[in-house]
Image (cartoon, rainbow, N blue to C red; front, side, top):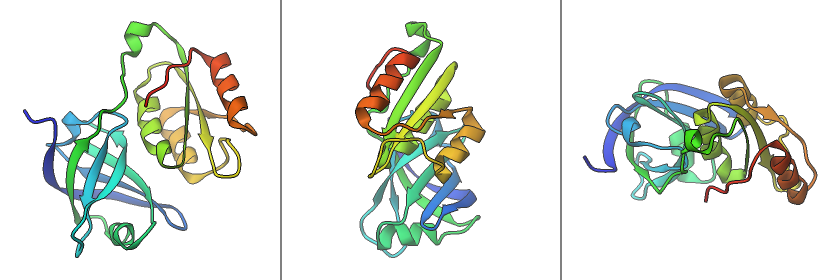
Length: 184
């Protein structure tokens, strides 16, 4: 079996998270079993030549979830798709995060991410079986502010949030919560 494939994925759910932020779940029976948290897919917008790389935010038995922000014409076209439409998805791509949590014998973990790193971090948090804390970054401060992606993540994955003023403080908070293990 190839580690990646191309599939026409039917949109099962489309949620507007904010003014220009979207959460899309697609039916992907060929791709979902291949996917790991931290990977991404290249999605071809209608009428465009180049695919757009979008992080995988969630992985189900036969579904993939993408959370993305409109940044240009290509992602604007993806955001305009509706439930029932199809997306041309090529993936999963990238190395993904190592998920040997049972071998580490840890019960608590802090997941630190920000910006474009938030959706794949949420997929890793979902895969973690123990207590989890998400520390999210923003341009002005590193914190887990009331943003729509985190609100959705807390409801779906039981992720607690913390506000911290600087990256140094975020890492100190993560160290107090559990061992640091970078996933890059």
